[in-house]
Length: 362
Ligand code: GDP
Ligand code: ZN
Image (cartoon, rainbow, N blue to C red):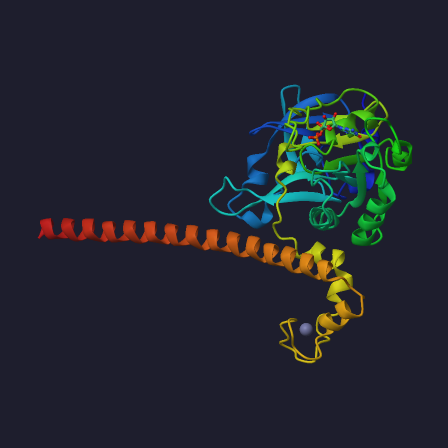
């Protein structure tokens, strides 16, 4: 018998009128889900009438890796009948779909480890990127943790930590080395039984190495970095929610690697609250924050309250968020237009055919 508490399940997640056996999604394939429940590993399929009814507003949320669900257990395919409320979520807009649908890629993780590397020469440490990951992590509902890996390759950890802390505003920053083990014991406070971690970061920063170091066993293939551009290959594969012998779980799904900048506006304000506090304080309400007199942003930059760099990062990320937003809207409208066009054509053809018919009857 498996104890679902070990998998992070909490009985308080159960709705009062709930029926079914709690299970956690450990992998998602096309229409089949790999699950763990008190009876062990099993597979399941969504109960169509509950997930794909005509009335889209009553449908259950399509499960992602990490989701807790309720199932009608069976030796064959169990039936998934409910997605329990999520405490955290990463989602993205599915580029393969014509209509921009939100697609969940990971759920119910406790900590988001944001990884950057400290090798010199390569542009691995990048505040701008760090801020984007932070924004996504904050929006997910889980606790972000910043990890600067490859600390063995620099003499100046302290400077990097300081710079990251400045951008991170209250988020803990750790410098570690997956290679030498330096600093890893400080992560113990997150590596606790029943907790679920996700690792975010560009390819080559050492995510797989860190997972292995944290696990104390080889869980993921480590790719050798190609000389010159500092990029690694992606060699991690199939397994999506992994239970380590320490009792901590790691979610790694392909969808997470392409976590884009969709819909980042919520987390943006939290990450840049130091910047946003000046907005609306300019002399002119339509201030463009360029050279207008009485511009609160200009004053804040000149007095050193915020740096010009931070302001520029804010503007850049904000414009990208807007772009992502409008892009998905444009795609949506385009598809709608196509549908209307098609319907229009069909209607016209029908009319024509009817006219023809009535003519021939005359
Ligand atoms: P991933 O693409 O983020 O999963 O990165 P990998 O774990 O595959 O590591 C990419 C490369 O960085 C490999 O050659 C690792 O051996 C190397 N690497 C990982 N962590 C460290 C570290 O702490 N120090 C050093 N010097 N190299 C590391
Ligand atoms: Zn202004």
